[in-house]
Image (tube, rainbow, N blue to C red):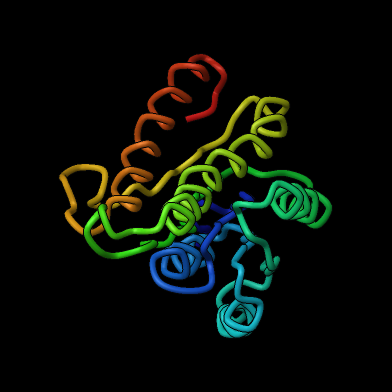
Length: 181
């Protein structure tokens, strides 16, 4: 029996652990080829070995979503290996500094926004030309509890995830009628 994602290609950032890994497992089980991205190459290798039994069409690419060159290389590898990208799951994220906002260092605060918000933007920006050429695609952005309610002591995480929600809403409006959800 064919899975609902048979013949599709998915790129999943943050794919080596946690929610990203669980999404990858589900997508592979439904027949999607998957390109998993993560900063931790060792954890990524372990995940790819574990999941290769579920679906052989699996590629791990070590990449930091906050770095434009890494994201460009990730998308190039996905297209080189599979020729298309049908779904992007922006799952890479960090909590960042934990503590009262008055005590959090601005460098650590910005690093959180770079990973959570800029990373989501960059991955989306790099897959969009391919999806627009195909006339279809799905982009899934994870925002977490920080986007829906104040999260004291996690100001960078909460601000970045709230911004991901607005970015997603804006992209949805920009892409109306394009075949990309």
